[in-house]
Amino acid sequence: MTGPAHCHPDEGDMSWTRLPVNCRDVDTDVFFPKGKDESRPRGAYDKALTICAGCPAQQQCLEYALRTNQADGVWGGRTPDQRKQMRGTFMRTHRTCVDCRTPIGHRGTGSQRCEPCQAASARQRQYEWAARRRLESPPT
Ligand code: SF4
Ligand SMILES: [Zn+2]
Figure 1 (cartoon, rainbow, N blue to C red):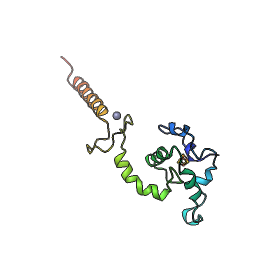
Figure 2: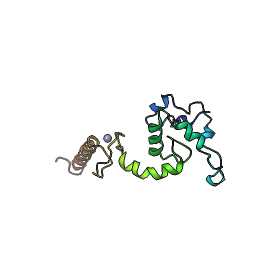
Figure 3: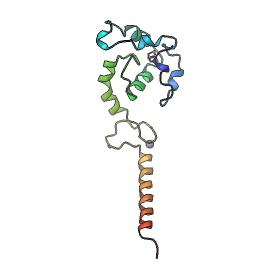
Figure 4: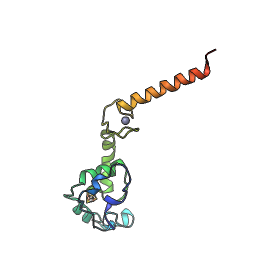
């Protein structure tokens, strides 16, 4: 078994898992210790945190975990509690377009789409509106 970098190989851009990540040959239990929070020994995450330190994919791994809301285990050198505290800010500053997944950052426009996708969506609505009009009032 290997660490968390290889747990979800098909969600979005996973190219970072091909980097020589530090957890490649480490047992998954090191990153996902068994038991509930309160039953785990103190420092249950320490070994994983040490392995993450200096990992070449630390930033991408952390962003992946925040974006996909991984609730358990150590990802990107952060514990579940640390990630919970970071997630709100991360999601506000790392928004992606709902259609094409392009990063759109924090623009304050309120739109969930990038500009090209907003334009495409507006064209589609116009097209549908015109088609409905043609159906409702066919030429005589
Ligand atoms: S940051 Fe940690 S969990 Fe993520 S790939 Fe590197 S060693 Fe694995
Ligand atoms: Zn888009």
